[in-house]
Image (cartoon, rainbow, N blue to C red; front, side, top):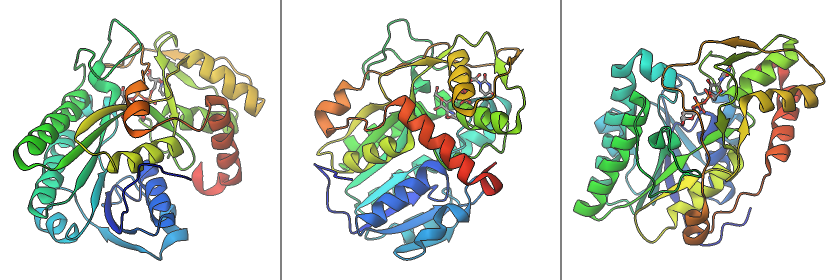
Length: 321
Ligand code: UD2
């Protein structure tokens, strides 16, 4: 892939590098001849995600809250890509303290290591969750913030700390507000997994999927390779900033199941269940700012990305599903 505007990264740290998004990012960085220090506690990540790229990476099983470890391992890095998090909205509602420890204190620890090691740029995985049920769609970076879940509070706190560290210590902090990321290697293993991975799993098992609420909620799904591209472009950003990273389009959860039924040729009526606490009704990104400032333009349409994802699950059925 061609990353215009990209800084020359000789060494970078990727937290959560054995996870879904992180592992795709590690692959892309090693393709750019960057040496990657991967920090992952393997709570949700898997070593198999990195099995093809043992060369050019240093893997450390560790916690992002471990001050000494992060400080030591991030020395001489040109950038830190902070992907590690407890990513689920419902999990944050169920256990707000644990997710805050990781999502708030872990992020602060990364920023502090960047400060002490004078690291040029820190790219943080933030979330579209910070917009809540916004009135005017699509969401722009300047849209009002509305925090409906502990997860949203935690991600927004990360952004505030990033801004503060940038103002106080001059580190470039680029916060990427991810919309709904999907693609190969997303783990469908928990009820809190991304809806696309769960629906594909159901389709292959020929089982009815669950839809929470009426299924008319809208999501802006973005293919993982486009998110990787956004991260690498963001590391080259000349100044601190916040960007929406989505496709700039949306689909309802009902329609999503229809699309997956169509691809898999398994048709079943979903089982409708009670709406999830903290669930957002409509999520849709305006991505013009990232397009203008870091040259972020998604390469994968939704249909293309969904087919690639479905095919990957079919080819990796034994290990992935
Ligand atoms: C996603 C991200 C989260 C955060 C948030 C921002 C994932 C896994 N989570 O949360 O980290 O960035 O976006 O708003 O990517 N659903 C069903 N049936 C299922 C599973 C889900 O109907 O079996 C619904 C769910 O209620 C929600 C939608 O599908 O309305 C998407 O759910 P999700 O868990 O994939 O992601 P979301 O939007 O809660």
